[in-house]
Length: 118
Image (cartoon, rainbow, N blue to C red; front, side, top):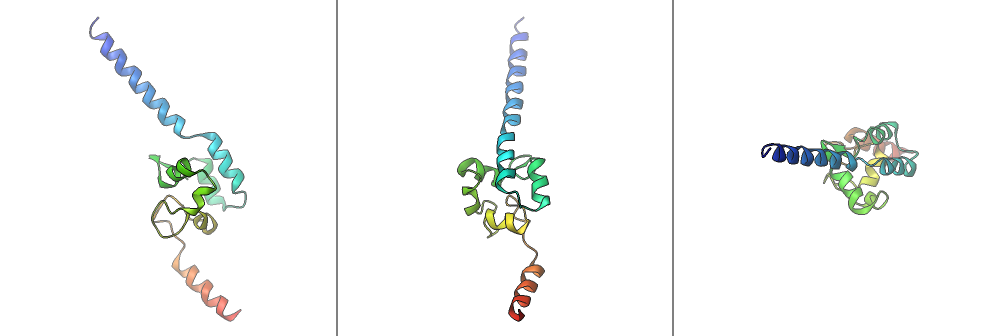
């Protein structure tokens, strides 16, 4: 009987940890994000729908920024440290929680050159 209690306690702790991880992916936040960004590119809307916009294994830096500040206020921050705010990354169709996801240099340069001649 003495072995059953620690085993049962271990199972209870593991179950609670599993529920905490599931609760972090909040459907209300997902719906609010989709509602706040109806014109976001389909890539980001799909990522928000699948929860991968804010979760990659756990809560990524963008997801943490939303948790800390709220969806719209998080636009002003650069949680992934790539030099671009989350709001600009949403406009650029890049992932605000992934420092490797940045606007392609070619499109920035080519767009600037075209603007000189327009």
